[in-house]
Length: 115
Image (cartoon, rainbow, N blue to C red; front, side, top):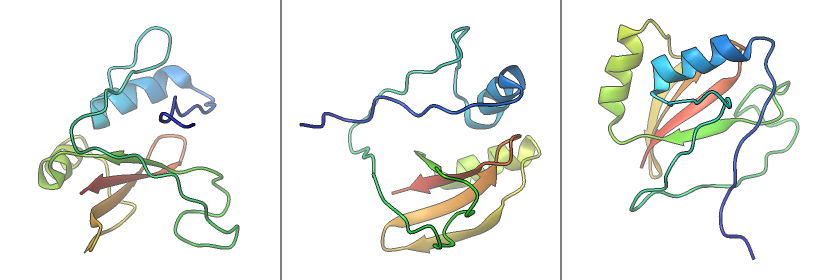
């Protein structure tokens, strides 16, 4: 029944500043309609995962965390350092790939993943 995710939506006190940050930091070309279309590529996958309210994988006061798959983690790390974004958690590597976390201007933890 499910074809894929249709989108991720959230509110912001300052959508214009958030739009500019996502463009500068993650290269998302967010249009005048305040949205971006991300085309799925070859071996890309989307994970839908549920977490218990007490799980500490991401902040308990944050109901949703977005994970963006990246092509080259080292390139991403160099870019976010150049634009002045600090890691929110140390880089982790394991069976599922490499992960880093940053926070957007609204304080949302965002996970970046290289498979």
